[in-house]
Image (cartoon, rainbow, N blue to C red; front, side, top):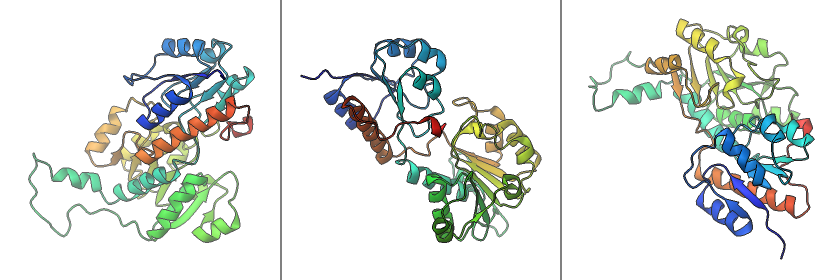
Length: 331
């Protein structure tokens, strides 16, 4: 009988996925769902042939260098892979996989929800109807927000998620603009009636809403720097469902507080899980809508992610190339 690979899973996954993992592999589960410390991760990497981390696990070069020779695959339960030092892993002969594609629609849904929620003051309005507040009733000039239809949306990163956001926004009568390393195919531009900007600076200065949908890489760290954020119009809003590190969060807070930017909808933060107290105060003031990194949090999406992890592990130990390998060209 073929030896089953030893798999260590760092966090709780959907029951159906954990059950299937136990059936297929020698699997250690994290039943208590307590995040692993660096020491616990190091110990896991000493005994596992496959590590299944999530975005909250930082698999850096030191952990990889100290891993046991039996570790052959890091099958991440995530779309992004910026939490893993992929170069260090590949140099050590450890393959890395992720779970791309399955979170596209869920993340785009949440992005569109924030695009609507921030200008229309949905969260601020919902708070009015709470047990400890009295509502005096409707008046013509109360809780006025900004119309979304007819506005210009600038998408930073026109990959799968960016295009899915564009499709949704177009249905709301929003004009689609985008900045991307490479221009998308003409048929995609035509279908979305999208305008490409080779200059991010020029796009930022002209948009009503900016949506961040690019991956976090060394090249996109603080892509929206203080200088670039200052290019945005005072009536403009920023929405980020990608990675917190892409935006200079301190500068964003300062500019919103001063009125230089109208507001923001954020699902990701620069120092997760720590949230800047100044952001929380802006949320209380109705200037920002804050969500706890739940853009991809659907039952269907998590199960599909788990299925991709299973397929990647099976393919690797059956002697095939896993379908979702992270390659050096992707870094």
